[in-house]
Length: 207
Image (cartoon, rainbow, N blue to C red; front, side, top):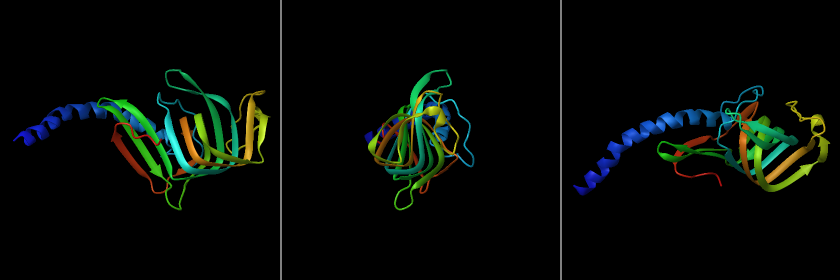
C-alpha cells in the first residue's frame, strides 16, 4: 500500500505542474525551434529578435566554404543588445551535430535537445549566419584574410559590417571538436539528417 500511495501522489500534484510547464514551455519551444533552424527553407530569412536564452552547439567537425566574420550585436525583443561575432558560412557540413537550449519553466530547468548528422551523413546548412558569443575547437583556414574592412567581406548572403570595422574571411574553414555558444542561427536551408529532438527535465546540454 505504501508503494501505491507514493506512486499516486506525484500524479495528483503533477497535473498542475505540467499545466504550468505547458504554458511556459510551448512558447519557448517555438522560439527555440526557430533558433536551431528546423523551419529554415529556401532563401535566407530576415533578421529576427533573439530570445533571452543563448544556446550551445557542438559537432565533431564543421567543414565549410565561404567564411566571413565581423563584430555585430544581437538584439532581444526587450531591446537588450548582446555583442557577438557575426559569422557567415556559405556552405557548412556538421558531423554529429548537437544543439541544446536550457530553459527555466514552471517545473524547473528543462533542456530542448536536438541531434543530427550522425554517421556518414552530416547535417548541411546553406547561407548560414551565426551570432556567436563564444567558440572553441581546432580550426584550419584556407586563404585567410585577417583585418579586412568589414564592409568589404564577401559571402553569398551579401551581409557585411560597418565601414572601417575589423573583419576577416577565408575560402574554407574546418573546425574539429566544435564547441560554440550562440544567440541565433539563421540559414537559407538547414538539412538535419537523422534528426532527433527531445525534451528532458534538468540540465542535459551538449557540453
